[in-house]
Image (tube, rainbow, N blue to C red; front, side, top):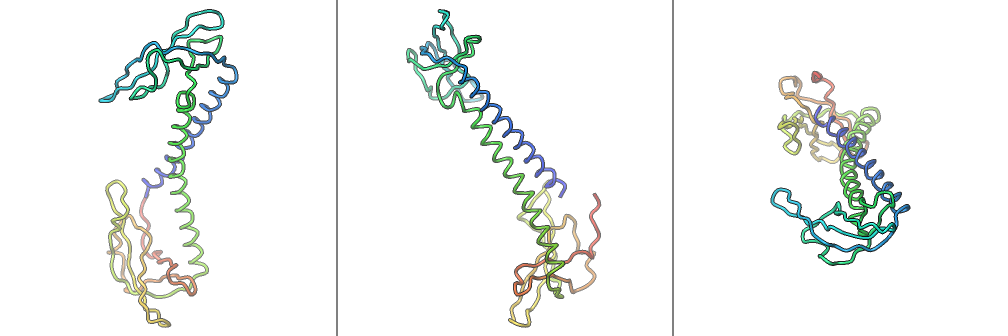
Length: 232
């Protein structure tokens, strides 16, 4: 349970940080373009960059600045296969004060960092926020049923391991009960919220109280208040 609590906040925090970083990169690029001078350069070489088993090619570009200086720079982004070829003319942006930090006028070169960081940040943030939201809604639903639901006595069946959920290599336990609806003669099976300890030795009675929504037994809460609390 502690792991889930940590994960939800870590994912949300990391995601929010990445989104802030993406906004910063977007604003930085926008500011750069607002002040930059546009000109044309020539790809004079393709610089190889190896990472593990993969190789990427970054274009090396030369151009003449407004001051008549011959400037040469290597693009910050590369690809495989290469996006440019030697001798190709490319449109570039540069600042008069820092022409060596020129950038090729390409979507990925200009906006790739913001897009990647924003995409990853969005995924992390949504995962963390979704976990928080699910836990919050589940808590509200349980509180509603405990206050407004109909109390019924159900028959204890077993304690099962919830294999669908795992934290630190452990699976939680759930108490399973059943109840015969006297009005419909249908058997309903209820499962408790997840428990991170084996409750078997603490179940003394064969009947366990369950709160159900009026006219809708599919919405229920298994009352496990008789169990001891798990030490933190």
